[in-house]
Figure 1 (cartoon, rainbow, N blue to C red):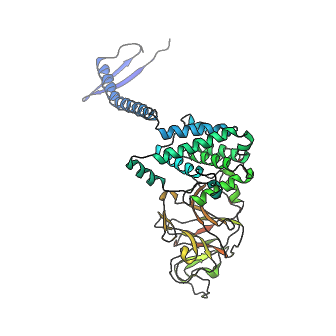
Figure 2: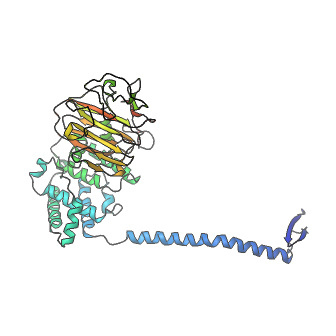
Length: 442
């Protein structure tokens, strides 16, 4: 039998005790027991806070579960039932099943706003044709607060009845006539994936898309995804889509064009790279010809090519202070410091002091700080009369200008950065796909 030697040095005051035991099962002296007790008490001092933290975490999780089990209000129950009915229409996608099974529960205010928006659109059978099947965005939050203060919800109840009548009509139609089409089903699956990953707060956009697609039953189903975004941006020009599905995003990117800066338009304080893709502010003003198309006030430069038709898309890596992007009309004045807004022929977004994002309408339109991007996608659809801005990294909508274009439009770029360049990306550059593994969307 092997012999085990254990040596333990114990300090008690100034006395050093040396204990050596040959038998591993022997009982240690009293001093050792006292030391073991002290060590246990020290460990207990560390264990107790951990136990308390574990108890608090359990109580917190229990409280969250109880909060989720709170009874749903009437507007939330209505949205659940509407989702159930629409889910039957789209047999190839169960995305709306997350709503009527309470996996995705919208806040009551969001539910009421949705009911008012789509109830108002369905109120007249002529109205969907006049608005292309998309309700005009209104300040429902303020209207709802006014209604609640007055103690009347007659308009909400009226909207509910209109929506219910519409769903009853759907039941009487053949499945083929209300089938939204394969492109829409793919979009719904994409939206569901992003919702599961937390990139979408709720599936409201999926519900809107399906209703709109069903209303456009006579339209070519292949172009419904693109028309969905165009109509939504027109009626909700700020933050219309928190996530743009793959098929629509690829359709936008397919319009990518090579955009370069025109040195003859650049403010003398700007420095433009040799490939005309980068611009920043220099330390001294250059001596250059004072062409009529050159900016001599604001630190801006225009693109070398203008557009009079078609779809065009370009991306820009912006700095962190005071950038300006958009388009300038051919007739727009470029001299001096007159405001570059819609009245003077400019359709632009501007960032000031790193956080103040605004559309330069008259008066200017402030945009939420949450929309401030690092890479901006600019999309011009000349025939549709839309100029839209996107957050490239999030694939989300920021702002859209809508008007009838009648003259040549030039890309516009402005910066006050003296170290970091404002960079126009190559037409072939695209952000990494959100798909896990190999992308199936091209």
